[in-house]
Image (cartoon, rainbow, N blue to C red; front, side, top):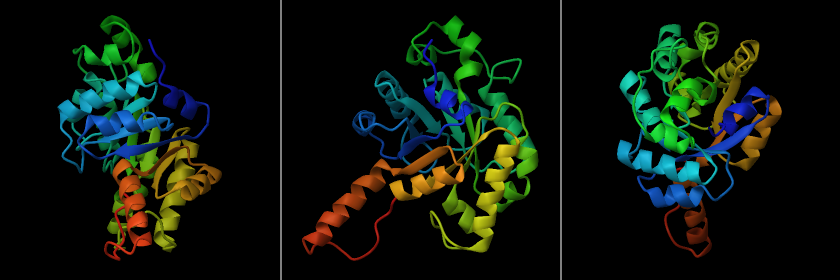
Length: 264
């Protein structure tokens, strides 16, 4: 059975850097899998990506030697089970704001005795290069479980949330976190409340021996967060990269509008 190299890196205390796939297209997944990122997260929360397209993308990404992850639409057993059973190597779960919600994630993502994930499917084993029986026996050692801290409620309950067994990483969603603090959505800022919240998650993650992660805008921001101790880092998205470069060229040619382009 193939190893989940991202989970192994995080357990060794090393950084692992990837990006988001937001376009409902397997061609972009194939092209991005050749870029060199450790992992690619198929975004199902805020995009028109279907479970079918996601499953096809997982297979393409895994076959390229990159780790396929999925951000599920919401914290439900159905969402988590479907992406794992169709071949994702791990999950990113949004808006986990309490210990009970974190426990629900682990129950859905881990087989017994660690959780209550149900048995079934074929595609998960194929993407790991093994048979279903071996997958069921070893999946708990390979599946990456990432919960998101993107609301002030999660910051306040961080100790309770991050002490739940079975969680590998906590990932800060800066746009929603800013919004919950009454600030304009942004990847980063100097607002004291935001800075303190980020520092609190990093400190609490370290205390509980799990990896801290965050979404950033560019390579420079990723390098700064690695230096601070963050390990699981997402840089923009494939659509953000495309739009950013396209607008740069258009501006150089005196074309287009003067508004900022979305980075994510």
